[in-house]
Structures are given as structure tokens and as C-alpha cells.
Length: 82
Image (cartoon, rainbow, N blue to C red; front, side, top):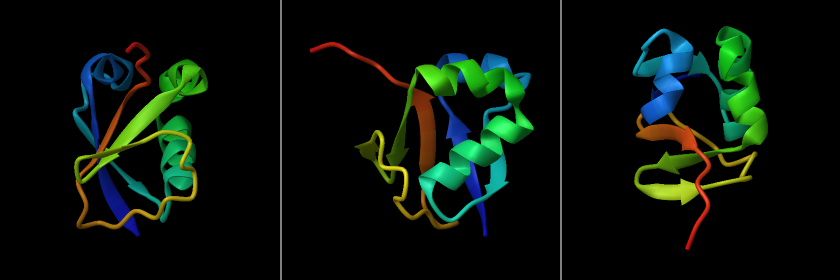
């Protein structure tokens, strides 16, 4: 199924300014695989780590979290701190 993924901040520079991308995916791993294939420049950032917000809840390393077309999905660089 096709889901829309909003790219946060600096990630947009790696997709020629695209704010929202559409990919065929059923879980977060499939989202990452599809985005990496469509936008190879994102590969290094994905390798360093990214987080997702799905309907406002933050997920990291939740590879098999299901995604649906009706959800708000945001991909952002992984942030550390405290």
C-alpha cells in the first residue's frame, strides 16, 4: 500500500527539497528500504539513524511497526541528548 512520509528538516535537502514522498510499504523497514532506493543520497543519514513519528508518537528501531495510508508519518534525523 502507498503511504505518505513527511521529511523533517535537513532530510529535505537530500531529496531535492521534497517535503513529502510516497512509497509502497506496510511497515517502517519497508518505508526505509523504499526511501533509500528512491533517494540514494538519504542512505548515509539512514545509516546514522533516523526516527519516525507516527500520529505523534516517536519510534526508533521499531522496524516492523505497521504503517497505514491514513497515518501521519514523519521521518527525522535521530537526535540524541537529554
